[in-house]
Image (cartoon, rainbow, N blue to C red; front, side):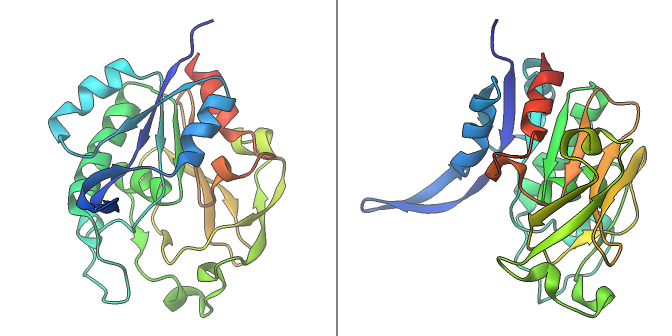
Length: 228
């Protein structure tokens, strides 16, 4: 059986190797390795040409919207916040267009961390620009802080991971207003949304944590299965 092509979004920024410092397309290997383990063929997508997104979508069988720097506030109508890391407008434009095209074409999507925010904004939703201002604590941003997520058992996510899962997922932003066709299916104990699903789509799941890093999480396998 042939392996379905699974696109993975990537950084585009300066990197150093040997004596060179050049712009580079960067992707943590955990994504590609998880796709390989699940039976897919990973393809890294450079965020260079927005006009190429329809071609990518026609050639891919599935898509991972990967994690990374926060989505720029101009994408969802908020003012810049100096506490948030400098956005990457080129990557934002490319991934928002890619997400919309993938939704339109019913391509299976797994949206991870930043990717969940991209999917939500692409569908017309908004984000909380600085989460500690809303929840009055900074536990969500603590590196290495594990917390339990409650998951809807009737959702695709619940069928993959169960009704509760302990995750480590530091983040400074979160979903605010859900985008069109999206449903919240997982929550932290303070009711911050940690998982979303695209209704009526073959497979459209977004999570705040990183399933590609955890061997016990079956979400990448479910993505590849949907891509077949």
